[in-house]
Image (cartoon, rainbow over all chains, first blue to last red):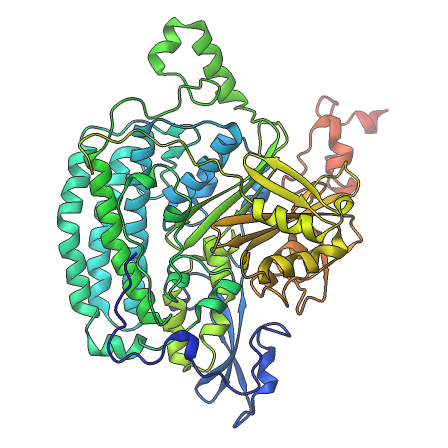
Length: 428
Length: 197
């Protein structure tokens, strides 16, 4: 477990941040209600930030209560992107739900596919072959890099560093090229399916990914050269938007938002899925729980993801990618011409899908934003009876009012950027 | 990494939630606790009035520390009595474990809110109220969170018709269209036949 050295010049650890007198620790009257307990120097002014605001990264409306330029209260108004995925799941067969999951956290679609597929596979008690698991890991880590790159680019852009944005999109485009090569689609790939993958990867896949991972660490050095020790960047981010480990936990934060406060919780390490226990990687954690620590963690994660991909490519086994259970995955095309059984399976799977036994499961994976869980209830039918998505951005955003409290209004932008929300993930 | 992939280790099939079960067995009379093991996870059903005590014990016991509110949600079983199953998921980082607490509640039952205890539950309870209409007593701000405030109904209930618009066919035209929207002549009728007769 790597512990980052505290960046020089950062003040006290998050636990020792002095708290304002009379501000209760845990939320007695809903967010924003601590306002009247603070003696304000002047009348508070309420302003809307969003929903049409470039740095809310989607359609998020924040109602900020300002005392001069200080934020004294913050209420998040969400739901502008509510699409009712959980209702839609109930009227689609399991395999038809995969394209819907793409559109939840639209910055890392394959990771949503993976979470959904693993939950259904747990219902079916099916395990897919090692080659499929390794390719899933490679694709998931590529999309984690892509997601972190968008975060880094837009977060830096919010704070005025435009160059990083261009660099990040350059690298992300190479990842989208790889995804397009294996699935035909650049963003909403639906590549990871229940029971395995859409198809085995083409032979160009390994050299393409190798070429990417060979260049990528040097590119991360480039971003870090622009930001990590840049005095403007450090002044804008160090000591800002702090949250203590205890408080982050009590709000159910996960991912870099929780690890920034020093809690080494990563689902890939705590409950390894899809062969993550075969790879050697570090879980970077922060010390101060501020915007700068969350930045350092994600940059470290870019390098760790790159290492995982390299290891998965080194050990990439041969063999099939999909489970041999013909009740779950489609038979190969060639078999359909010769085997009546296969033709029947193909027909049954494409018309009505498979029927998992009645059960209730919860399966969690580590998305770029934190713990993404699927609570899946099957009643024995061919559609999920109920599928609850435990979205990491939703819980992380619910702690926002704690992080922006008493910060400057201009810094609220930096804090919102640092928790890396996707509104598609918050609203579902 | 070795040249070839190591053989896959079988998933460690420990029983998740066993520590929570052991604690609740000590705290609750046997008649009030219902436990079943499903796919390696202990699912514990407790009476509604015990919820606060149970969650307080689980989250504040220093050895267990189920203190991370993962999520809470509801499952609607219209044919069952009582109708709703409310599920709370609490994670313990200390034990690397998941506690699964279930309540069975009827439509009119008020569930005590966990928001004062675990602030992370506040938004999840609002979502549950919004989409299922479960009411939480003691919640600081029980309003809709995802849908507009003037929305009618609770969409994730099984009896909520979520989409589709009436399409008029000859067999259902009475149902699909109001009388002034209906065509003057039905297909198959001879135009002008009404006037002639």
